[in-house]
Length: 426
Image 1 (cartoon, rainbow, N blue to C red):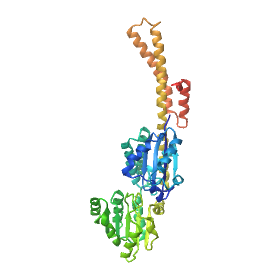
Image 2 (cartoon, helix red, strand yellow):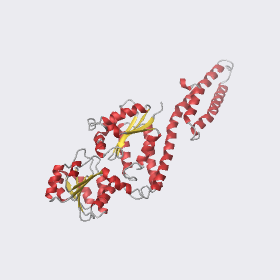
Image 3 (cartoon, helix red, strand yellow):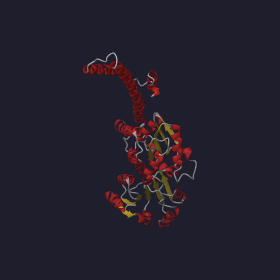
Image 4 (cartoon, rainbow, N blue to C red):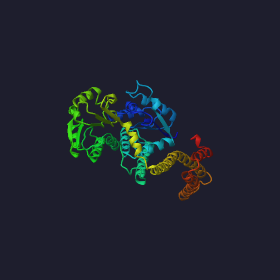
């Protein structure tokens, strides 16, 4: 039975950050989660995507309805979600061409909070490679993801969708510029020195920030990043003592636990004599306790608060968006043609086998009776002639099956062949 593609998940449009982080997958346990995913009876192939803006399962199944139900249960059973309930209200599920289009749009950053941001493609590749290592990717998802990478490349090279270099990190700094009249005289603490931290530091430097503190669980990485931008590295265990110096604190770690609680922030405010502090949280999971936003002289912005700023970046690019969507539609049609062609292979093989059995049976019957006296050379000539006849008979129907016009339903061709030649019995 033909396998179909489906996607079950939630994103920044269907669920707030507090829901997304509860169902997020840690990189350390991703391999084990992929194994559990593939152990589901109806799931034949699977990839898990888990970023700050989305958690999705991309799968291939011969029973989409059952697989969809199993994946919803799989997401609900995430340890930190199991006791909360209500997750299904935030979930969406796509199948067939809708699922293919969704993944292509995700890869091309058309479904991102910050449309055109380049980071999502790298994340997609990382999660695909993790699934490959876990052995949960087969022929269909292998082709699907590689096509999605090609779609992203086409959109970036053939449209101006990324003409203004935008990313979550750049939008965060744009928000910081709106918070402060100027950034040049402000002290910033950056918690996290990974890929996102590196991008944030670059945008801070371009914006004129000269006083930057960098902390990271791996101190060597903090030292390395701070050196690039003339900042000061802070040991992770020591950073709470330096918070009092920071006007702006940016959290961008993948830490599963909250780093700053209201109690510690209250102590910092006392040391600052209640001078206002701003926090921007763009971690995969929230780095700062949301309750600190209710404190006097504290202003906290999370990943969802960046959306209004991100939407402004889209102004003037509607024409490029239209071009990008046309590329996606074109690529979806091409992928679906390939997917449908997978059904041709067993049908063509069965048809060849059926005619070959008939040819051999009739040939052997004649060679053991009326044509019994033929020489070896004559027998070989007869073998070659009948084989050539079968190939010529099959040439036109097989060629037309592979190259029929897009508007025609390929399934009808395959079904007709099966019925006309009795292939259903095989």
